[in-house]
Image 1 (cartoon, one colour):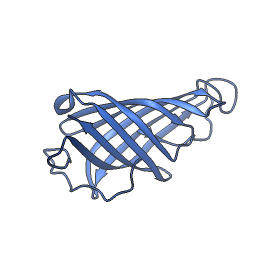
Image 2 (image 1 turned 120 degrees about the vertical axis):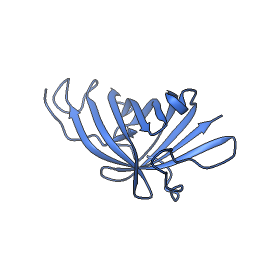
Image 3 (image 1 turned 135 degrees about the vertical axis):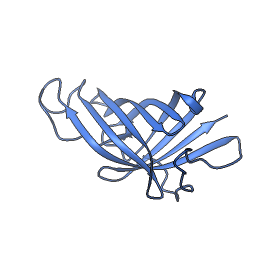
Image 4 (image 1 turned 60 degrees about the vertical axis):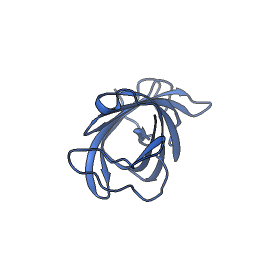
Length: 161
């Protein structure tokens, strides 16, 4: 397989591929995930730092349909580690510059799974929450992402009740 220049991480965070740049929520204790109290929607704000990243060129040399980006991230809040994330994005349209992304956020109390379209080299994107495990087994909602620097994304997870 040929490697090509990175298309930009999607944070899971998606990928990444990143969300609101508002101040982070309070730091999480090691035995529970960060989330605000009260309200019909719970919001979790995270910093996503891509630690492993590969671009896989599966078609014609250079960017083509079917090319993938795969990555692994460390998630933090107020400088404290609160979990990890992983993503896979596949180019589905060169004309529309779109990739289909699947991502998982692994937090102390469970996983949150995400899916959706993101532009190739996105600066902002939104993925749907498709489910989860543990405390997030009935998770619904969405995640916004904002790319703030190479390998650094801001994520805002909006969990619906």
